[in-house]
Length: 264
Length: 264
Image (cartoon, rainbow over all chains, first blue to last red; front, side, top):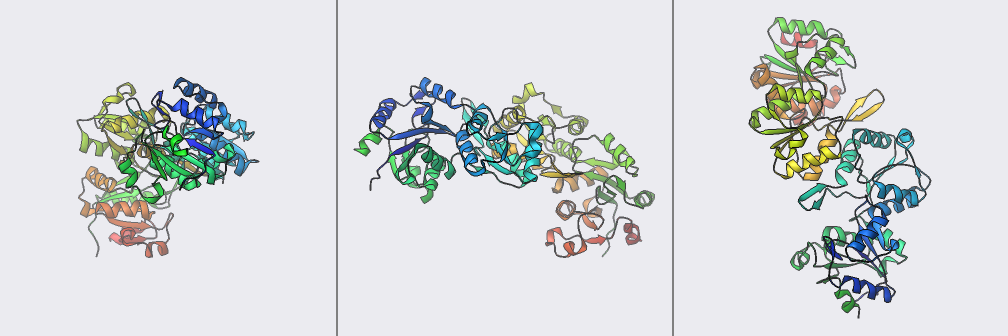
């Protein structure tokens, strides 16, 4: 049975783009969704780059998007931090994408020299993360601070193989302190819920579309969204058919462009 | 039934010293062991400091020891690396204690600029560990390199609480690569076996004495040593009595000085 969908969270790589190029037809599909008044957002677990950078990146891929049509795990983390700990003092380790997102939520960010006052530690991918920052994060958590991570991805694919993602340094802190973080990025339910909140769409009228079962579909299921697997990325229809229930999409489409046909 | 003991591995803190002072009577006990021809070594999971530094530290605690009576997890890691991978190219991340130990084993150490040739990655506590070193270690392991860690301790006690130990950065690499390291320090069997090898004593005539069940006693059991718990540190006789079999010491002594009585 078909759901009335008012808002969609799109994964980027493997869903609307492949590498550095839009999947053919996607710009037209997005235009059609806009004309129908369906709100959508592109959601990436990246937390290093700002929304402005992502708007440029998407444009360079051939995907026009406005700033309020893009979400990163940094923006999700900042939104969750604001919702749970608006009045607390925040120690954040991350790149510009995370720091800007936290500042946009008007949260109180501590400098490293004030780290001993921290009530919440927020960690993303920080190119300058080192033993000193590890120690500051651990001391804060041993002193009782909350612990939020943008995501827990162990690695990201690159042109030549892999690179360590945000997860390893988050894991280092978790291992030292025996405290696991609240993870806000995919596949946690927070991403889907917060994306719908930002779109202004109730979860029961929301959907997620993506190419990966353990990230996109898992998040959608946990957030109560309608889940759509597209076959333009890393997952085959066979894999989807044999997946456990919590990873089985509600709908499988050859590509995102078939969304319009399905809606008609 | 009493064992004939020819070699003993002593834990340091809580066994022969407490904080920065020798436990009273210990220097005399050690002298008596020396007179009887019993070989011994002090074993610490520290891997940052050199053997020379440890000899000084022990002397400052009131415990005279020669350089060949001290072992660190760095020396153990270097000995294991030598035994398993003598001809391989080594990428090492650690402090002077680890680098010196590897050099003493005449292993081939790569500079960071040769990291892509690494066949074995050896990791200890490295005060300059950062995202770049994380990436180099991960790339080497993704390329098939072996992975050795001096120890996996999550934290170490300090005067004011805790500090992150060697384990967190080891865990970061393990998490990124999905490859767990071969751990050479306590509580792994490697420490006990390698200590006995260095002492020239067969395990069935060796013993370990320490104050911690999951470190000292666990290592001794796994290495086939006679295990002696002393009550001068973090463990009570009650805890020892209710421990699982693999952590139950063969002998419990009030302190190390009672070793001589027990031997008589």
